[in-house]
Length: 86
Image (spheres, rainbow, N blue to C red):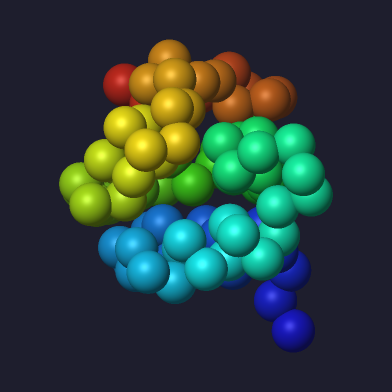
């Protein structure tokens, strides 16, 4: 079974917005959906917002930025990769 991180990143990368929303709700630990998404980055600090941007998944970006309020300047944890790099 894929990990939570892989499932979230896969849904974001493929533009599967409904699936992404389901996963975020399922995996939320009470700290809020935005925190759930940003805490599930890969080993290089790259997360759902970065993959969605790299693949041009505007529907996912709209959800992550407008609905969840994730900062477009969110940086990955270890490489400090901003969304604009993507």
